[in-house]
Amino acid sequence: MSIFLSAITNPFSVLTLIGEFDCKVDAKNRLLFPADLKKQLGNAFDRGFVMNRNLHHQCLTLYPMQEWEALNEKLRNLNRLVKANDIFIRKFMGGATICMPDSAGRILVPKPLAEYAHISSDIKVIGSNNIIEIWDKNLYNEFLNQDFDIEKMAIEIFEKNKDSKN
Image (cartoon, rainbow, N blue to C red; front, side):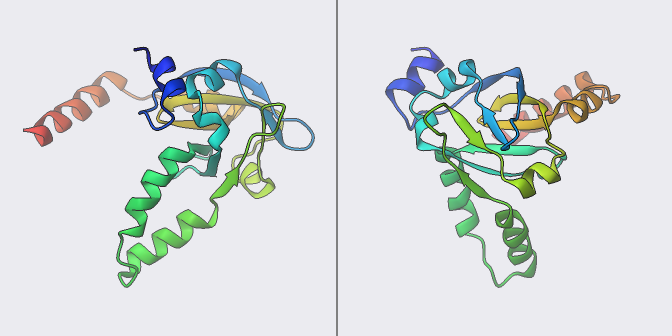
């Protein structure tokens, strides 16, 4: 069964989202969701999303609701009496916003999140495995032009994960 059909027939299946899409945000901060990405999401699209600041870059992360629920379960298990846990949860959850698509397939980008990510008009929407990233187009191009040794990163990441599975 293809990943697309799997998501359509089973809304709780594992998502694998791929692709890079040029999009625009309108004057009311609404993003018309890319049709191909919407198709990949299947029924998960209608369940909605949680949008938040990305932890590592000045972009936004759009969590399909099933992914957000899984992450939130892990957060619920953190001991809030531990200061680092408490601070992390507060800072992370503070920006989280539920986003439901409207009848035209648009998603509102909340103003504080748009300001954080410098979202104004031209954006890149990236299918990034189980989440979606929303970038200002210029910031994304700057990110792509950074000098990363992607081959070295891949070797380190996969070697590390290979060792942890044994």
